[in-house]
Each structure stands twice: as structure tokens, then as C-alpha cells.
Image (cartoon, rainbow, N blue to C red; front, side, top):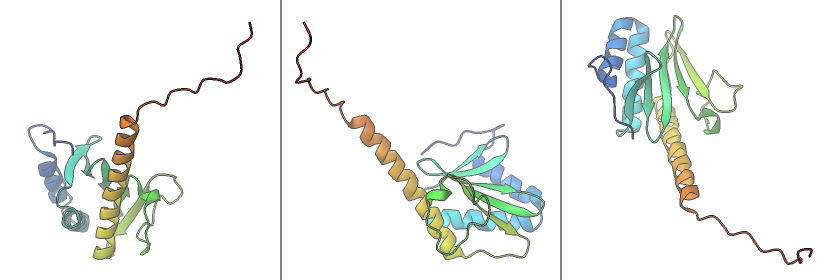
Length: 153
């Protein structure tokens, strides 16, 4: 996991808390609720602050971002297209090959159990990618076979 790097003397967690407070409306409440669900699903998840002000949750790589817009709170899952979503929480960015997003509008609720399962699945996907990369790095190069055909003289 990556270490949180302070920005202007504040940790990523402090900046996310500040963002929630600054929103001051339903979006702040929803972002706080989703943040709690993320930590409930994976207590080891790290909070990061990237791209000039985007909350990011990571465990062995990016899991999701938490963005707030005028009409929605958007959680974009970095490897969302690879995740099973039986409860159909993904409702945005459905055309891409990698990411998927959940847009939550004012007054909507989210299935907490299904959301936590998505977080856990995203962490598992990250771990699988890390393991595959580690496996590639550990494998020695296979020697080339010698050709059985004689070389021309």
C-alpha cells in the first residue's frame, strides 16, 4: 500500500474530511456514508488525494475515486469493467473497457451489502494483478531452442 503524502501539511484523510464538510449538503453526507462503507469493506484501504483534489481509495492499486458534482456523487472504480455486479450498482461509464462508475443522486440510497462486495472484489482484482505481475517478474527467461536444421555453409 502507498503511504499518504501530506498536501499543504494535511493528510489525504484530513483533506477528504474537509471536502465532505465544505460540500455541506446531501453530497457531503453521501460521500461520508460511502467513505464509511468503503472502510467497513476493507479496513486496510488507504486514502489518497490526487489530481488536484480527488479523493481516492487504494489497496494494492486504485480501487475507486469519490467525486462530487452538482447533481451526483460519483464513485469511479478503476477496474470496474472486470468486476461482477449482480445487483447492478454500476450505472455510469458503462461503455468503457476498464472503468465503471456509480452515480448517486440526491434522495437515492445504495445497497450497502452489494457496495461492500464491489469494494472487496475491486481489492481482490488489484491483488490478482499484483500477483500476476510478481509472477512474471520471477519467471526466468526461457532459453531459445536450438534449430535442428543445419546452417548453410
